[in-house]
Image 1 (cartoon, rainbow, N blue to C red):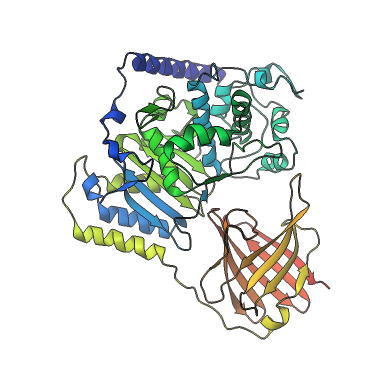
Image 2: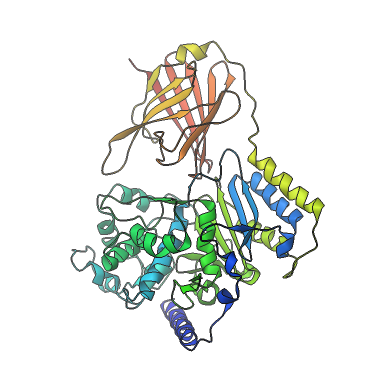
Length: 526
């Protein structure tokens, strides 16, 4: 295994060297300069009918409908630099930044390429510990000393870490978030493998890359991105969280508008160029050409990994992939970028097949009014929220409204809950433990629609996922049971909460978007 990965890295080094040589003698691909200059979306995307870009509107209508049955929040398809399909699924709307979760990793990988191009990082095989010589690192051995920047980009650092990308409890992430110094926590992990020996999904790797970016630039990764990435691409709306030390979180927690997610993909589709400027090193963005790390995915033995992107050789596509289906997919051979935000895991292959099925030609197709109508109807249909059934309001609603229920220690960390169902503006207030180094508990609230439609708060409304828009609706299932369907719009999750009342007692059963259910019992407080 070690020898195979070493050979792979030699091949990658040779590919990148060849790219640099071609760029130096101006023999590299000229796709960006051949592009219609008006297609650069810095100040805004151009739009086109699918047929004008060689795509079938009826097939894209099927893809929009697929998103409606698979908990999409948004879907964008860009071909030849123009948006050909754009759908937003109610109650989510286009103006709400969406947490891209682990797709953040690909942005950190992009910034790593930029510090390389800028000459701040001398080489990708630079030992990681060189950047942290001022720290005492636990469990130090020759294997840990050998970890390189490229190992972090490849997820082959070898750290002992529990974060299965195919499921399982993310214990290392839980422990990390309880630490007051995330960088130290990651560096101190024991080694499970020699660097380069095996792929293992580890959010600590991009967190270390973020720390290295700060070491080399004197800026947080967010500030460096503002100057080098967001600014040139015309991205003006984002939110990016920081760790307890003030470092930009590299593994997650970046929120972008879907149209701006597409800009990141478009930078890669245009081979790291933007409006005539080379923002990335030669060939960095040609991910398919240097995808050498086997992810050992049970569902696809051909799946590879490269510089924090997931690569699907069979589909000739690479993606930034985030929890619950936050995707930036790049199809180089089709000149397409597709973006999905969602509340449940998205079928990679369903998306790939749906996109490819819609491409009919490299040239414009004749107009198709019938197909265009199907697509317009599909987009309009998913944008309109459909009310769900509402049960009759029982007598108990008024007696429990405004009453606070308190809960002993539990797996949800829930301390208290109060329903306000008879107010002019029905809402829910709750307090939970906050397992971080700053707060012991935090109080939140969310409006509740009682007519089968979500009621939305605002980004300023206190919520479990700050910066997102709380939304909830509720209905009585019977005379003792109230069910709440809740989301934080733009976070990419949906929860069902069932409240069963009996005298002064309350049983709460919460089921998250992955189907995991937790039940807790509480009593009316004073």
